[in-house]
Amino acid sequence: MLKASIQDKLTKNFIAALRDGNKTAMENFLNNAEKISIGSETLLNVITKGGFTPLHIAMEGTNDDILAFIANHHMTNLDYKDSDGNNYMHYAMNYSNETLIRILLEKKPELLNTENQKKETPFQYVKELYGTDFLSNIESTIQKINFNLQRPKIS
Picture 1 (cartoon, rainbow, N blue to C red):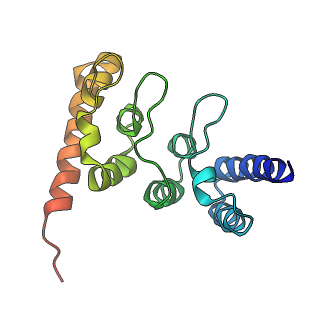
Picture 2 (picture 1 turned 180 degrees about the vertical axis):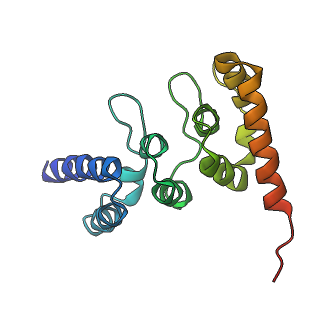
Picture 3 (picture 1 turned 60 degrees about the vertical axis):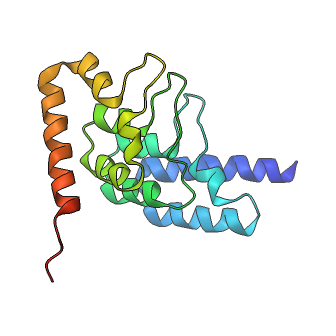
């Protein structure tokens, strides 16, 4: 029972540090979770009562370093889908979050073609929500990212 209460407290404090944008505190919580055998995965993939994960919460913030830290962490489950079947690419496009779109294209490009429960890919999802002008902006962002990802590095 003690372990569950410690886990609850760590999780609550981790989410608070995330919302505050405190990357150092978040890293400390992850290290402490490992020491008491709760595991980083528990903190990185916890689902709040509202159905959101730390990555969702980080998308709402303005700190791209924290967003990238969570998205790139080896224990973060990038295959998460919400109750409507939306994956992180649906959300990244909805928020026009270039940082997360870039990371997801590098790590999980198949998310671009994954459908939610309404059979909408992330492109169809944002088109339905915001129309074709918004979709054009997202497509431009993805083209720019793909160009940057594929462009050879100059030393």
